[in-house]
Length: 496
Image (cartoon, rainbow, N blue to C red; front, side, top):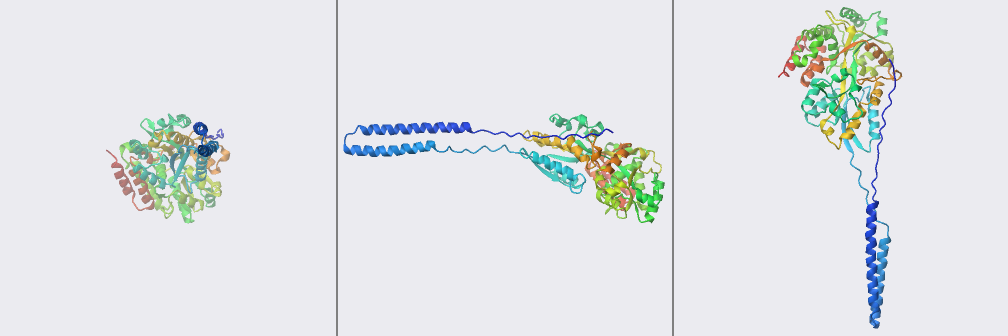
């Protein structure tokens, strides 16, 4: 693969100065005219005094002359004093913008991302005030749901793709389409992304977000542990059961996989379901068929329950659920295998990454689609622009300038160093990348990709029910049939 670096953009702020010279000059002319009038009055008084012959008149005239001279001196002093200083006009009020995102805290991208945001803010501080609203992980999803419902969403925000998330924003005229935006921007062009990336934010014939982060899942194992117990990487479900028993007998968790808030379990569910007949179609048609209780989903729920019974997962799937804890279990050598995603690569310990290898996901019994040829992937997040500030001509220029920066080659190239897979059609310099990320790119590049089912849930509530029920399924708190039934009821509510 040809590798190159992309030079970042340079922004220059021009300042202008308004002169007050004209106003001061006009004031100077007025004062000079007043001086002439005073001197004329003095001369008139002096001539009047000279026409009187009496002594008393002479004294009065002299006194009058003295007063007039004093008045003239005062007038002269006034006109030769330092000119009055006028206050310079106030600079035009700076544009105020708000931007919400979730790459903060312990996220591997946070240091680079937030560093670039602050750098931009400093370079443009004379023209724009940007308020950053950083909320980690899925807390961002909750925050945005509340703010969108109240009509108090930020000017720009990172958001999730798929009908369940984007359609309500489009129906409510909350955000602008990418086409509207690109008609104004001089930097952002449609050809900078692939058609498949654009499809993640497509609704009708328009696109309502700029794809930022793409992803592909990867199945990985700790070679040191496998070598120690003389194990080979399982390629089938039957082999996975055998390997899991050996690992459990030696105090090792087979799979660092569980679910908390649906993470990362929902993608694991997809990786299994898409192996079965109609699994991919069942997922992609969910928004129109309103049928979650398909044979492929039922089979997958039963397999996950069977995995739990065979002790393939951590004993406490809630405590070990979510992204961070699942990585910790693997990082500490407590688990031998993991199914994860590139946004977590930066959190793997270098020494663990060095002894880890990628492999195809095991093929389930009765599967018709070989998992060696595909993985779950797509676009995870993108940038969306609120309609109200975009249509405000006092804010539009600065909003577009900042948005252009957020999806610039400079930003995407920098995030690649944090093991983010850019959704933009961009190549990264391999010398800047995490070695484990390089392994991932080499392996995943050979695989096809199917999007996760959450893209097609008809409503945010039905997607939320799916994530919640996954927690219960992995924990054994709900049986497979109850899991399927609960989600089906939620999906059916969306049917009109």
